[in-house]
Length: 428
Image 1 (cartoon, rainbow, N blue to C red):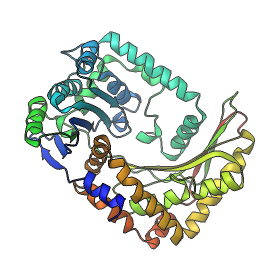
Image 2 (image 1 turned 60 degrees about the horizontal axis):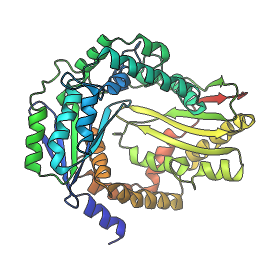
Image 3 (image 1 turned 90 degrees about the vertical axis):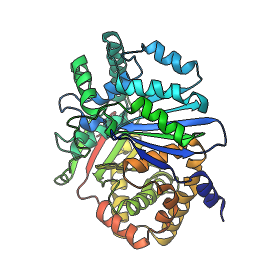
């Protein structure tokens, strides 16, 4: 047995799954190697639920979760964790908000108290709301000066029609964030945060029976939402032909080029074949076609990568490159040439073998910590992949045939239609 196989088998015993009567899902993974527990979880309350005129509300609410509750001030929240040497962090995302933390096993009940209070009872006090707003506005301003962010946002605005959640910036805009009221925050929280929308993963030195009792204690009386919004992303029509946008950003020494194509959902049967085809194109290796042809041989870019953004809905395939502004058009042409070559030829047998070797080889590394195991379990639950997903992953990847990767490349990696965005100084 290889080291990789041993790691997968040793680090990824099948988790146990429990669903409370109110719908909350608890997943437990036991690892008694050390007396710590990693906490991961999510609530299906991401940016896809933002009102059309209030982009950034989900992100705003997430930023308020550690800024005081009805029973604790922000300082008391922080002190409750710091006194234990524990941590909790909340992050916003396009589809769900996530939380993560670490604690000693003996302190798990008290950390779960803080977590449940934060998710269930944020106070949205005026003082903390304005502090959060100022920080979010600064983030929007900084992002607006980043050529990569500006190009990526412009590409999404062209690829997805107005009214589609991916058309809007998940972090919001200055105008939308300034328009958000405390009532907007409270209303979003009341309408999107509920037990049936929440998943908690505990990985590490946990006693299953005791952990379930603690989860029932802090979450068991959380009432279900009366009319939860469906957890789905509308299907976006493909753009009609090629679209191009150049965003002039004076004073920038670099231009960012983004070519975006329609993608697919994480649950699409073609996902794994598409993932491998995208990996060969430019999805995570310095030896990818894009890096080899455009950076190493043509010397056009500082770096170039292809991202397959597959979630509960079909996100974009974005190919991003940073280059000297004078080379922006040539870079775009070179990217499209490689997309078309991948569409026409697909990966070859050697590229498939290398991709499978890398993807199965790196997977056990992600399982070396409790946090890594918890993250994989959480993703499997989000997309309905089953509690045995970690066990099955290597065989899933090895089972992708060359013909399946070629079919996925023909279906998804094609330049017609596509959108092209360039952001930078004198980028045209």
